[in-house]
Image (cartoon, rainbow, N blue to C red; front, side, top):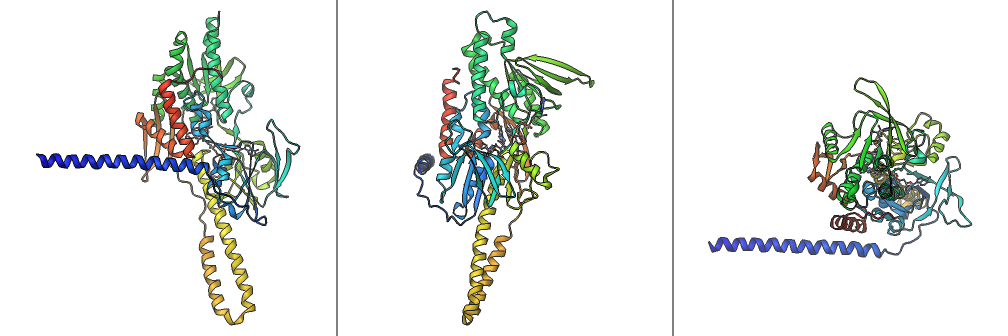
Length: 515
Ligand code: FAD
Ligand code: NAI
C-alpha cells in the first residue's frame, strides 16, 4: 500500500543521504590529507645538548620508527643512500608498469619535514660503525659529490636499519647477468629488458632458436618475490604484449625455478597447491627441486633432482633472468658483527635481545632484515620493530625528564627543610610515575598474515583473524590484496597515485614502450 511505499521511499532517501554524506566526508578527508601534505608546520631545532640519535636507513624499520618518534627529545640524524621510502610490496607491479615507480616512493624529506622538531638527513652510505668511539663513517656515493663527501658522525644512540642485500650464494655469473628485484632501479631495469627481449626477438631474420631463447623469461627463487614477479610478468604478456605483438603469442614463456620441493614455503599447503595450479593455468612452468648452479650471459645451468633421487643437469637458454633467492648480510653489518665478540655465532645478521638491543653493545639497536630477532625478514616485522623502538625511545626520554625532576626536588629538600613533607610527597608521586613508565614490555610481534599476488587477478592470503587462521585464494582475495595494500600505502599522495595507476593500466593497458 501507499504507507509501505512511503516507508520504502524514506528508506531510500536515508540511504541516498548516507551515501552522499560519506562521499562528502571522503572527499573532505582526502582534501585535508593533500592540504596537510603541502603545508607542514614550522619546525624548531631540538636542544643541542640532547642526545644524538642516529638512524641508518630509510626502509620499513627506519621510517616506521621515525613516524612514531617524538623528535623533540633527541637530535635525530637519518643517514641513507636513498632519500625516499620504498613501498616494497608493490615493487613487482612496477616491473610491468601496472604501477608506476614514483607512486610507491615517498620522499624522506616529506616525512622528516612533518615532524614537530627538525630532523637532519644525510644522503650517504654508512661504511663503518665504530662501537668503541661511537661513530659512523659515511660516504656520499651519489653522482654529484661536494668537497665534503666522506665524513664521520658521532652518536649517543644508534639504530641500524640498513636491510639486507641480495643473496647469490657465490654462484658464478649471477651478479654479472641477472636482474634482482629489491630496489626501484631493479624494477626499471626489468621493465626495460622485457620489452628489449620482445623487440629483439622480432628483429629481422632472427632464428627460431634465438627467438625462443629471447622470449624465455626465467625467475630463480620460488619465495614470494619470485612468485609475485612471475605472476605480474605473465599478466603483462597475456593482457598487453600479446595484443600488440601477436606474432610471438605462442613463444613467450615464463619459468620459475625453485630448489625446494615447493614454492611459497611460508604459506599453507592448500595455498601452495592453489598457486601451483593457477600457475599451470597461466602457463607458467614451475621447476621445483631444481637448484641453479651456474649462470652465463645466455644460459642457466641447474641441477634437478628426480622423483627417484637421481640428479640431472639442465641447461636453459634465457632472454631475461630475474634472481630472487632471498637475503644476505650487508658488508657494513658484517663488519660491525666482526667487532663484537657476542655476535660471533650469528650468521644471518645482528643478533638482538627482546628490546632489540644488539647483543654485546649498550647503545646500538637494530630492526628489520639486518636484525635477527627470531622472525621472518618481512616489512610487517620491520615496521612493528620500528614502532616499538619509537615507543621505547619516547619513554626513555620521558623517564629521563622525570629522573631529572626527582633529582632537582631531592636537592631542594635540603634547602627548604620547612617544605620537606610536601616535597617528599611530590618525589614519591614522581617515583611512582617513573616506575610505571619504566615498566616497558619487551618487543612482541603480532603476525597479521601473509598475502601474495599470483597473477590473473588472484591472490593468496593466510590471515590471522580473531585468534584463528584462515587461508583463502582467488579473485576476492585479490580485491582484499589491493585494498590491504592501499590502506598500508604511506601517504594520501601514494594512495591516490596507486589508484590512478591501477585505473590507467586497466583502461589503456600497460605501456609497451621501452624507455
Ligand atoms: P629496507 O626496507 O630494505 O631498508 C633498508 C634501508 O637502508 C634502505 O633505505 C637502504 O637504502 C638503506 N641502506 C642500505 N645500506 C645502507 C648503508 N650502508 N648505510 C645506510 N643506509 C643503508 N614484506 C612484507 O611483509 N610484505 C610484502 O608484501 C613484501 N613484499 C616484498 C616485495 C619485494 C619485491 C621485496 C624485495 C621485499 C618484500 N617484502 C615484503 C620484504 C620487505 O620489503 C623487507 O622485509 C623490508 O623492506 C625490511 O625492512 P628494512 O627496514 O629492514 O630494510
Ligand atoms: P625467500 O628467501 O623467501 O625465497 C627464496 C627462495 O629461493 C627459497 O625458496 C630458496 O629455496 C630458493 N633458492 C635459493 N637458492 C636457489 C637456487 N640456487 N636455485 C633455485 N632456487 C633457489 O626470498 P624472497 O622471495 O626474496 O623473500 C624475502 C623475504 O621478503 C621473505 O621473508 C618474504 O616473506 C618477504 N617477502 C614477502 C612478500 C609478501 O608477503 N607478499 C613478497 C616478497 C617478499
